[in-house]
Amino acid sequence: MNPKSSLLDFNTFGIDVSCRSIIELTNLDVLEDYLANSPSRFLILGGGSNILFKSDYDGDILLNKTCGIEISNENEDSVEIKVASGENWHDFVKWTVDRDYAGIENLALIPGSVGAAPIQNIGAYGVEIKDVLQTVEYFDLNEKCLKILRNEDCGFGYRNSVFKNELKGQVFIVSISIKLSKNHSPKLEYWALKHFLEEHSISNPSIKDVFNAVVAIRQSKLPDPAKLGNSGSFFKNPLLTGEEFDVVQEKFPAIRFFETDDHQFKIAAGWLIEQCGWKGKVVGKTGSHKDQALVLVNYGGATGEEVWNLAQAIIASVQEQFGIRLEPEVNIL
Ligand SMILES: Cc1cc2nc3c(=O)[nH]c(=O)nc-3n(C[C@H](O)[C@H](O)[C@H](O)COP(=O)(O)OP(=O)(O)OC[C@H]3O[C@@H](n4cnc5c(N)ncnc54)[C@H](O)[C@@H]3O)c2cc1C
Image 1 (cartoon, protein in one colour):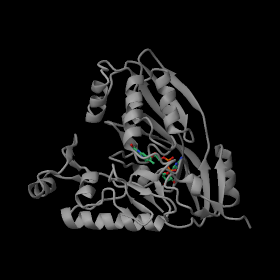
Image 2 (cartoon, helix red, strand yellow):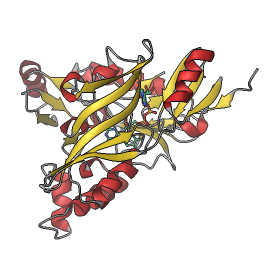
Image 3 (tube, rainbow, N blue to C red):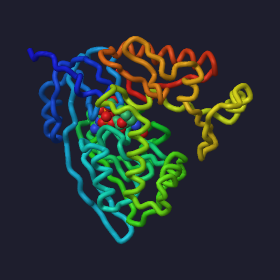
Image 4 (tube, rainbow, N blue to C red):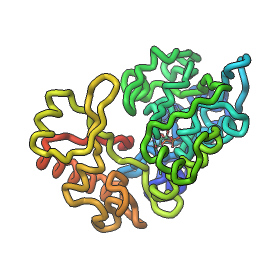
C-alpha cells in the first residue's frame, strides 16, 4: 500500500492534509488508464488556489500537468487560441500580452490553472473569462469521451457555471478556446485601475500597461499565498434583487454596492465583514486579512477545520447584523 501523500504544497491555503496518492495527469491517456485500472475516489486539482481541505482527502489527487498553447484561427482583427487546461493561467495571460492580443490583460496574476478558469468564471477588474471564451473541451468522466461546450451553454454567471452545478465532479476540462482582439480597446471602468493609470500619467494605455497596472495593484493589495496561505476572496459578493436591496440600504445607507447590468445589486462582502469587526482579527492560527477582510489567511499551521470554523462565524455574524447570507467562493472539501 502506498504511503500517504502530503497536499501541503498543492493548496495555496497551505493546509497540511494528505491523500492516498498524487498522480500527475500529463495527458488524457493517463486519465483514461487511471479510470480503467484503479477507479477510486479522486479529485482533479489544478493550482489548488480555490480549495479548502477541511480534512485529509480519502482518495487520489489527479494533478493537472497538461500543457500546450496553439493558435487555431487568425485574421486581421482577432485570434483564436486553444490552451491546455494544465497551463498556468497567469503565464498564459502574459503569453497573450507579449503578442499584443487584447482581452485578458485585466485577469493577470490570478493564481491557478487555465482549466479551472471557466469553472467559477474567473473575473477581476471588470472582465470575466466568459467575455472571451469560445468553447470548453472536456472529458466526460461517466461516458468516457470528449465533448465540447459552447460559451452560451456553459451557464456562466457571477463566479458560477455549469461546471459548479450540473457537471460538478463529472468532467475533466481538457482545454479551452478563447478569442482575443488585435485592436486594443482597454477596459478601464474599474476605479482602482483607472486611478492607478492616472496616477502614473498613462493616458493612452497599451495592453502591457494595463497588464502591468493590474499586476502592481494586485501585488499591493493581496497577500501572496507563497508567504501567507490564502485562497483569495473566501466569499462571493452577495447579489440582491432591487427590493431586497432597498430594505437593506434603508437600514444601512453607507452600504457598499455595485449595480449589475441585469439590475441586481452586488454587495461588497468585504465591507459587510469589516462592519462586523472581523477585519484584521486573528483567531488562533487563522484570521481575516488586515487589509482585505474578504481574504481569510493561514498564519502558519492552521487546519482546514479552523479556517472553516472562522468562515462559519463570519457567515453567522453577517447574517445576524445585515440579514444577508454569505456564500463561500472557495470550494470546501
Ligand atoms: C491570492 C489569490 C487571488 C485570487 N484572485 C482571484 C480573482 O481575482 N478572481 C477570481 O475569479 N479568482 C481568484 N482567485 C481564485 C482562484 O485563483 C481561481 O478560482 C482559479 O481559477 C483556481 O484555479 P486552480 O487551478 O488553482 O483551481 P483548483 O483550486 O485546483 O481547483 C478548483 C476546483 O476546480 C476543479 N478543477 C480544477 N481543474 C479542473 C479541471 N481541469 N477539470 C475539472 N475540474 C477542475 C477542482 O476539482 C476544484 O473543485 C484567487 C486566489 C488566490 C489565492
